[in-house]
Image (cartoon, rainbow over all chains, first blue to last red; front, side, top):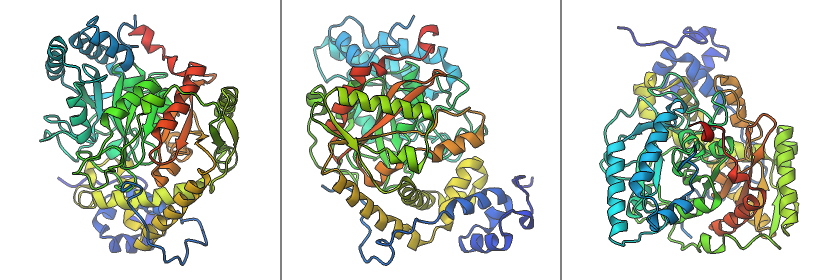
Length: 75
Length: 466
């Protein structure tokens, strides 16, 4: 029995609305080539969702301040 | 007949302690209502036998004169990403299977110790991240104000079960608004507390630096009772705060005269333009606070898209770290919505995540600075009324149109409270935010508003028909 393949938008990478080559390269770097083959629509959507840039906040660019992740539990 | 459906925790507790009703009667009434309203799909699993056995224990405790507090004998339910001994934790997904939990989450343990009765596990969006998907093992929960409308999420079942009178109390989780969204959509009260005030031990994570646990109830007083029961230090949760909180209940009814309230208008007038009905609702709420004697003026934070971009980057990155292995090995076991949302973190470089955390520190400092001049802020929770549950694109659009993420970014408390009904009979809501660890002031403002407007007394029609 073959594995399910996502039908939308297309199972063919070259039919993806995003740049298929870029997406394939990024997916390969992320270790998602196999997932891309089976669920190209999901990976394409994920790629698009991740592309939202952080707003240009000058005080953040170039800061050497550490990121304090656990806020503000240890008070 | 509404019977015991409309009963609040506070009312039920008084009747239980005076032995006018028994815990068994109360729990049977809840079970009966859950069955009659099963078409709302609030629950994934109900264990009636276990609930009645727990109710009998609570009854025996009352008969022996043991008093454990206001949650004794009160039925409640857990979002199904929270462990309860003997119940499977599915996260509304095929991925986790149905293995029973070997121990209860901290919050469930606290409620058990308080004598509360766990009825069952509630629907959610898959792993608290997906949407109202139709290809999961259980159908999505439906809004009791209009069954064709979305109930908000991701604590969707919690919002529906409380709003429909199935249980007076539910526990949800909130990473980017997942307690406050269903509270707003279902016209009830939902708190996202200060990060670290309620232990996350035994709860399936979404994004560890944003995740909070929160109570959903029909009234502000009930919410404060439930919060007081489940808050507290847990040595086994590294993010748990050891700070002692003042009693929220003692200050609850002190009013808002002289309270300094900032209205973050630009979130819903400029950054995103909210539905006019919701803007009218918050304008009316502002007038209520003014009439109650609060000092109200306009407050300004960084634009909402900055807060949302910061929070979303962190959420995407951290949640992918949780799901990476399963997404690679079993992507077919996720719904398309959860799969794409969770996969998005795979494409975020480490430097972007770190930048977001640095930005977060700055945003938090900005918030702290602003709060030197205010006791609480008010703004909208949702910018849209609940979308049609079958309209996937409308749901997706409304998720981005909210002002809840800023308070996950700051880690500070925020509460969603109902603010009346719109022209189509759907609930309107506002959100109130406070300084870290100042839930007491938050509840005080929320109680004053709801007492003045009667907004927590509104009930969906389902109260009269089931």
